[in-house]
Amino acid sequence: MKKVNLLIFCFGFLFFANAQDKSLDIILKEKNRYLSHDFTQNGLSYFITGNDKSKTDLNVFCYDSDFNLKFTKNFISKYEGLPAFFGRGMNDSQVYYDFQPTISGKYTLLYDDDLVQDENGNTKVFEHDGGKFFKDFNTKFFINNDNFSCFFGYKKVGKKNEDSKEVYFYRYDLNDLSKKIIELKFPEFQALISTSPDNNKNAKKDKEEKSQKWEVAQFDNNQFLMINKELNKERTQNQYNIVSYDYEGNVVKTLSIPIKLKGKYFALSDSGLGTRTIIYSSMYNAGLLSEFATGNVYVEGNNEFYYIYGLYSNTKSSQINKVNFNGFYIYKYNSNGELVWKNEKEIVDSNGFNTTQRPIAVSVDFVLINGNQIGLNMSSFHEEYAQMFLLSSLDGKIIKNKKHDFKIEALKLNAIRVKAFPTGYTLNSYENKNFDINTAFASFLNPKVDTFLKSKTKEDLNYNAKITKNAIYMIEEDTKEKDFRLLKFNF
Image 1: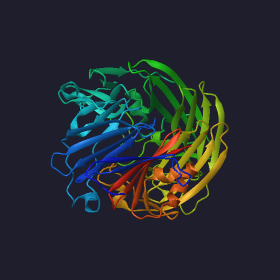
Image 2: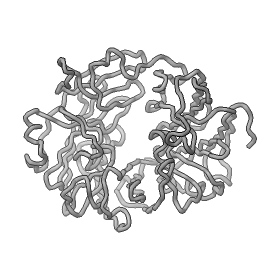
Image 3: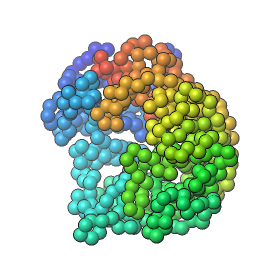
Image 4: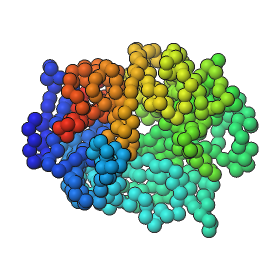
């Protein structure tokens, strides 16, 4: 395709020769480069470009789920690229503009410029660090919905700025930029599993401080779910204490779900919990996972169903952060916490999954697609494998599964920062192409993606993917031509 000195968008519909359902070609104008992209769960696509001047001429483009242009915004940005001799810049563009759209794209947070952008592209100043109002608050983690940016942590008290023992969340209203600090009150739960006071070395201290550990598991525009978990000493029983809050800090619902494994042991993995746990005195970090990381919960609909999932081992390791995996578990519960079905699936893979591993390197990704199917992906960037499963959400039966072995080009995987178009995964099935792990997972879940990738003979193509309930959205980078393409594959 011939380049011109404008940013041109060529819209492509589904043809019999193409596997994708929609596509949009993007050609960068002269002296412009890719800076960032993102997709929302409802299918909005964002693409950001800039030129090579010290003060970047920034262009933000937003498209709807059919790749119709919703808005474009151009302004002089404070963003500056990194030098070519540092990190990914040695081989690729020095990219990464730090931004994040909210759940359905009502707002876009442009962190590098301290701006918030509405769905029409209008911007206003957004002090994402809270300014003076926020200076006495110690943030542990944050979430963004369509109306609020919420930071969870503690107030600083006393001359030494020590953390208070009470947990608060700092609510920043994206509509009118008002600020509010709200204390979270955690209800007490009855123990439904057999626990031991020596479950961890700090149990006595925790009890004296009335310490609890809580973490946000999932959120939407109406409520957020916080999880408190209890693991018994033998690691055979796990209790999920779930509290739903509205954004005024009021408790909407509480639920306790006990899980017991027979002849198996809960094992740690990076499934979304256990990496940012609120503790009254500190926070887990230092490259290790906490006991929270023995699984996660996915909530379907308005607390209609709860899926609890994770990995297990047939042997109990003396080092909880070092393990041999033997399989996965998924338990489905209704809104009352009653078991609907369960699946404990053994995986035999002596060259990957069953080898001794560090759990922090093993990711477990759970997606609910098409209303009645579950995708589960267990991958290790250290051992370089992925075990993928497709199950029915109605009865838990396995529809298909596949193992991928891959190689990683670390420079492309790590990039400058996590979001700087990380690819790096190469698979024998798709020669001369670099993926993120989501693209490999997408090719397993949707045959259209597999057909598309196998049909591409051109070298030097990079792919990132976003898997949503109804479709897969991808971005294709042609590194030689410096062109990009947005792709959509319906389920």
